[in-house]
Length: 524
Image (cartoon, rainbow, N blue to C red):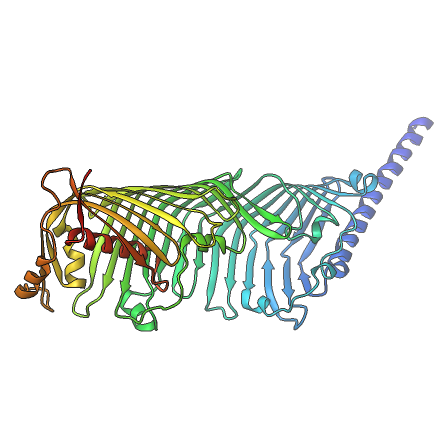
């Protein structure tokens, strides 16, 4: 063999052997660093196992098979979180950036089929601690171009497994341009990132001890979200709920076809959570509410909406909410012998602006509402208040078109044992109120009003009581079509009752005064 060729082949072989030796030693060194990090750099309350760690230095890929991570309380060593996965795949680790830029730059991290168990009450028992002293120490910045978590199953329990708080099935998360460094690791969200996407096939949430929330498809991408088939329901039957509660509580059944959110944003500012969105569209909500008034009253103080918004423990900013084609059925049971009376609103539409505790005065929360009362009577309402007003001042206005009085008998007969005849042609009222009192200005045009007081069974008229009642009521509001009966009256709020009870009390007092001799004729 020619001498130069032999020398070339020997040199090539030596270089190849050196290259493979370098690759093998690099694999060994990197694997040692990973194992050293997992064994010694994680806090003592985080433990892990895996079946194998495989490195491919040619591709810059690290695969951790069957990893299991357990997280315990520092104080009592009690397990509160367990995560097991099929694989963690770390792709395209840049050795150049590691050696020359002193940073860890990874193109892609994939977490495949994570199953996450979290015991909320166990974690909550942990004492407050200085989080900065127990976090993972970051000596080199991490830059991750893309993190994907696929086919996730999440269970959150109370201390016992039979108390499921949250369940997510087939969850997927993708986050781009993640940066983790010594500064970010000390924050509430220990990383910065840009685009993100979340999807899930279904979600179950235990809202409280009485109601559950479920959804089917949910998707959040590029700060826009859509949620399908939302159900918020009392998990007991009406009868069972009444038997187990000690004071009154509404029985709920809410179904929403879909909910769309635009420009969603969230995070922490000065370590306080903020949530904001430009617009929420609620499509075809159908709400059934049942209240059993035979159960003892709940005498706790009820906040007006301005007060409730003001007291939200995080910063909420929703520019607008739009409700499309809603339906509301409200049933109230007052008598033992029947199932209660019902009122309903159909084709309910609303535009609500400035739903927030971050706006400054004089900006106000405004509700503009339209719909049909008892299926046939068009109405429109306007409700305004300033969330920053500690007196909770508000103005509520409502216009209602023609209503046949027998339409409301299905509510008044079983509950009040009162049957009405006649009709209203038009009704206007304005409530100017606050958290303790209000003034209602009522104008109503009506005709042929007759009140019949019924017996206990609701099947027979009490003739004498009915005659006496009608003596105090003007039969008609008009001598001509544009005459209205008007009354202005003050109303004291029962703060143990709901917001809608306050609206109803104003409406009732305004009608009673305008339809009795106190009501004065006004020409519209």
